[in-house]
Length: 497
Image 1 (cartoon, rainbow, N blue to C red):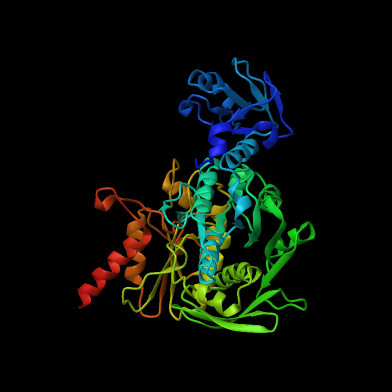
Image 2: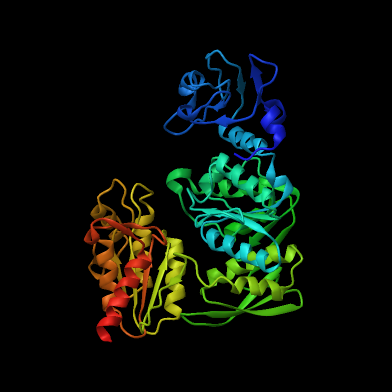
């Protein structure tokens, strides 16, 4: 973790960082480093006893001390012979300590948080592109990777762990970034992974249903999303999708200014609006308006959901003093993103799209978008992930039966569950299950759908996005959906040449 000289020499005081805590065995505890894994503890570390659903870190405190931990941060006293600092929630405390050890980098930059059921990754990338168009230097952390504006790395998760998050923010600050864009998942928010990060802006794309297997209820899920606004600075602001009913509910409880975006133009229009002029498989054009100013925007990524993502990113540009023409240039700079309505173009006379739609809501949006630009048949290859909420599987089946002409049910990271059992759950949502094709081998399912497509048709490959998976036909090598689709399309083109 990047630390200032002061932290390296003197450390941080837990009384200062966590004033509501209580020290046992010492008047205060100062630390220059912390660790939540007893196996990785080094001499002088503060061991943080995290409490999870399956493991309790307090049980490993003795091992951490044996490896060199000089103090313990916990929720209850553990008699291990070193000072202990007691707090109500060690996950929250851990994130706060990590930020303090990195000299609270978010206090020296404009950090923009992005959350929502769908659109987080695309919106984050659009915000970064808009900021770049405006001449700002920014870093980003999200599903597609982390970047400090100089170096980049693959993402370990959409939202980094507390020490990773603090380290990347510190690197951005050291590299002269004025802004940082942070994708915040509901699970990361529930686990307080961003505690201690001070946001200049919080963007909420939409709120539907997802990860209920983790959160337990829709209310808990919505509460987790709303936690992002608790991290706003005193002069921070929110960006809310006025066309999303669930997102609108947060407006009544927000204690900060909010800029709304929308497309429906009700009697009380949003602060930033858009009207779609034309849309094709390869591009769309919309008019973006703020006050009396309007500019056209042409994007190669299509769909109303992408327009909403663009409006959210544009709102960040507006508040940073950018004009609409410059903002539009930033939005248009994003031609495509891996696994986000990614168009696979190999000269074929039909459309092929790869999208990470993995629940009923996101699948509905994508199918509706593609239906509107498809003259022929719409094919959909999809599955549901294993070891997750089973209730969403029949809903996905219902959406697919109604939203496309032919669905091909296949695997989608089955985990420990039998693939056919997952597919059976999806078929429970069908009125006429015989209308679906069942092909557990995902690569084979993709090839079958593409082989059926004719001029004017569209094939959607949904569920995994950019995520690679092993392909049995190629000695277990891993490929992403785009690789499978592109390989077959080139084979077809060569055969017709």
